[in-house]
Length: 134
Image 1 (tube, one colour):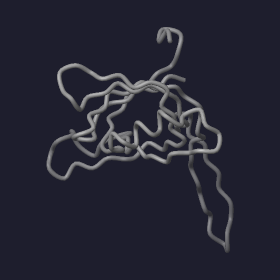
Image 2 (cartoon, rainbow, N blue to C red; image 1 turned 90 degrees about the vertical axis):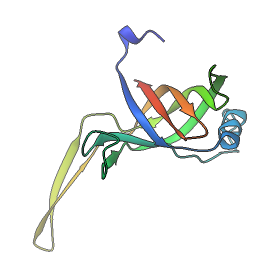
Image 3 (cartoon, helix red, strand yellow; image 1 turned 45 degrees about the vertical axis):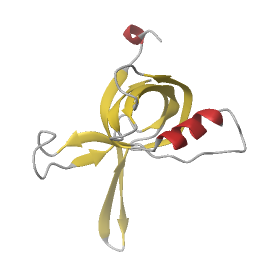
């Protein structure tokens, strides 16, 4: 994919599935009846510089991860490059408000959009980084 013509965003993976789950996701990626659920905990933003004591992060909403290729990264037996597609909340924030029982209730959200991705992932630490291409 030519990134000069696409919007892309890079984020840190703070936690994710083990290697056997990744391989199952790859194996059944194009099956319509077999769905292998897996969650990547992806940090959208941090409360302070990452690594400092007490640092927290906000989650990036994602769903429906599909892995279409896995390649072994040299240098460590646990490093992999993953590519595929998923749904991710990277769009512009939307909001609405309405009165409920005399109280103005405001809601904000971002719609999930289809995106391809490339991730560098360590199955031992379950950390890495991921770049989404929209």
